Image 1 (cartoon, one colour):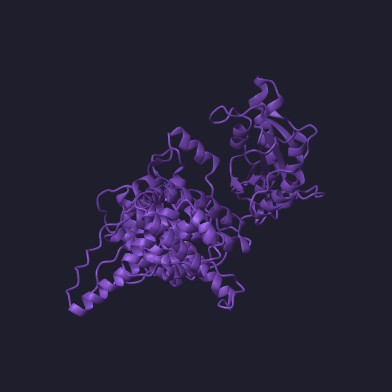
Image 2 (image 1 turned 90 degrees about the vertical axis):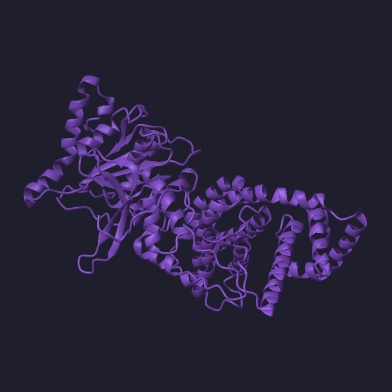
Length: 583
């Protein structure tokens, strides 16, 4: 059950909408189900058509009487005096009766302070039902005694009451919020998107674009330049004394109001972590890239996977682990890692194998909600992961190589599980749910990327004699999991990887033991597949170390580091102007 509190200034206008056909003729049988004084109250929805407009005028005047009386007494206009709270049941819930909706309305106006039970001086209000799954509560926010209601934090109070009502009525119980979620689009914004033929509202589209760009860029100027290159209108708020940018707003291309002016949304209104201050905190938490003489340009996907492994090991710790003496400090680091990991999902979605990008974009979008909680992130503690995420875009790598991408996505699945577990343990219900939704898409992307690689390795399985010998090594190295490993459909691919490791000088038994020790295997659905990626990563790491050592011994010149390129963004366009100028 979802309430959505807002305010306005046009009583008659809102009544026209509530008792009208709807913007898309979706309203059916509009009528009042509850009110502050039902007997004698005009109900335009139950009147003959020729009396409809007159009754709307009468009802508006009746609701506004305390407002007009206050205005005459104090001599000033009462601003934003219309209080509006639609309440909708969740998809799949049963339809409530009029009597049940009436009780819901009475409990909400009581809980929010609009009209407390037993207070005959409360605000005037009505509840209108014009659809099976929701009602609209409308009130004029001046009490009968001329005072304004005590309805501070009314949105939070309505949410809390809805959680109680859901349980009592046997409805789907939604997750409680912590006020870190991005604002939901209003019904008016949704209607506008449908009229203009857009699948997303302007707010949702801008949020998605801004999050993707913030994940890709290195600094504030590049952030605004890239947004402008995408055709997004940027408006800056300049400090009157300093002349610095202290805020910004974005407008979707072509999204204008009735006067033909762009419709802007502030960064913090799109998402709390897109405010200018939070954005600067994130962008500052990056490690400088300083190529060392005698090194080669690494595979950035594999480098990101290595950093991600460290993140997984840390995030999966329990708050009572002996290595975590300070739980609060531990939480600030995990929160920072969650935010940085969200950025990695966005950048991976832009450069992964093409067949996996759609699922990765969906995973990144779903995970956005898991990147924010009431825990303040210590972003500098996740600088390595954030830098690795951005380097997927800015440097040469092998994102199109399915093996390296699959290895990273395999570890990413484990990271999402760890972060979901952490959120759940802290009571972050919405974030844990978002991580679980992201996990569904991420697992699909992993399978799309891994299956061709595993199929290729399976085709190159060693001879039966060699495979049997390697199976014996598995039983000796990891006896507790040997039976599950050898029964795993990916065992032939792991046998190929073991044979390759052996040919490079790595004893299979030792390689298996080291891979098994990285993390537990008990929860792995496919232990052979998990060991496969760990083994390939370890082998690649050793090859890199040998290459670096050989270059250092021979004094070879450093391979020139490619100049940073323009970050990949959802839509490639020309460069933009300097964002710090006034507009």
